[in-house]
Image 1: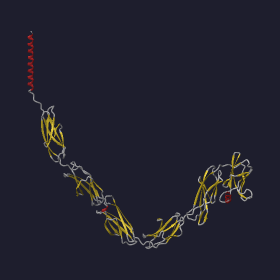
Image 2: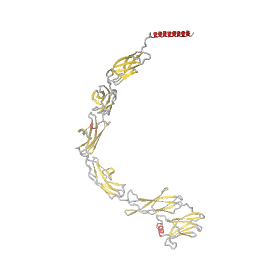
Image 3: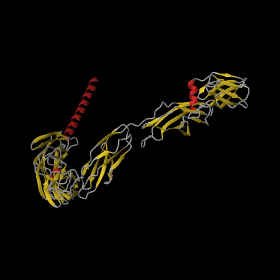
Length: 610
């Protein structure tokens, strides 16, 4: 039973093996009957695009067979490999030589080791012309202009030279490139004329380009010709001149001048700017003409007239008429003689400065005023004729005297100062001229009262309408009516302040009935002041006793009067000497208290004897 199973298994394996062999043979026989896949590569064409003088762009158009086939390309230029295994289908050729034929070979390879080769040839462009550029006309005058241009760009970086033509005629060739700026100056132009300028730029490869512009020369280069005459004498004169131009581009050294005198040509084509005319006739009118010229005929003319001098006035003398005073003096002079029927006037100089002009010819004296005292001066005149001549006089030197001044201490003080009034008095000021005492006047003003003004020749003044307990500044200006000098009023000013007292009222019943200064030769009370009241003053407290210019501190009181001690000789004499004179010395006041109230009582006193 076991043997049968083994056999059967072995037979089955044999059958399976036979079937596998048969299938394999059938399959192998089927594959041997199919064709192989195409893996070829083709280059259909090669082109050269954007061909320049030194570059070109290669493009080729390949075809590759097979789904998994890839390609690379080797590029040869004139049989020299310049690019290997590029996957691109274009290539930039650079650094080529202009106007040259090149051969190109491209070999294509695939990843299946198939390849293809294609050749092509092309010729580069010729050397390029320079690019366009700009040309300018500058510094234009009537005879010249400067042509400038910007260096044009060259694609091949070649060096450039330039030619300039004017109205079709070549003026300059082979002008080298200038890194500082290209320019060419045109000269010998004609005023008003139009010019066509062509600038030609040429490379070293004989390639060129050009630019044309046009401009017109100015009508004239000249602006102003100024001619002046000077240093004119009886037989000669000097003329000089200067020329200004329309712009700064004219070379002044190329300008020449012709000089004519009264139509006669004296000098031709000089480059000087001054000339002396000689051998002229005295006191004659002349016309000088100057012509400024350029070589192209451009010119400017100017004429001037002048007159030669005649015979000058004769010598003459100036002198002082009298001694110079403090602020003025008077001069006189002799009259000079003249010829040529000319007319003379004078200019007056003080310390070398003209103080008066055109004094008429018949005048022979002048008063010099407004001089400074104690000052040195010199004076002279010039006589000038209408024939253009002049003659100076001699010079006179003098010194002004010093003004006399107001003398005296001239002091200011106040007396009888009450609540609403006061007396200002001052020492006298004096002024003497030529041993003569001149009258001195006094102007009184108060700084705080603009409307107050008083003039007097006395030595005191009573000031009223004041405010109590107020400070005032009194100003006394001493002056002389007749100083003895023209335009001189000597003066001297002093000022002083005072303060008014309280404005105490008058007593309703008590008043001063009499006040007396007894003469110092009197039997009773010599040199004393007695003040008598209208009532008994036993119960009155005397606070202040003031008389003339003094406070009396020592006095005696009786039932109805008060009596000062004897005045000193100085105070007594001051009152007596000025009594009824220029100083108010006979007024006074008493301030007293009664029942807690303060009163004032003014008085005037007289001088008596007993």
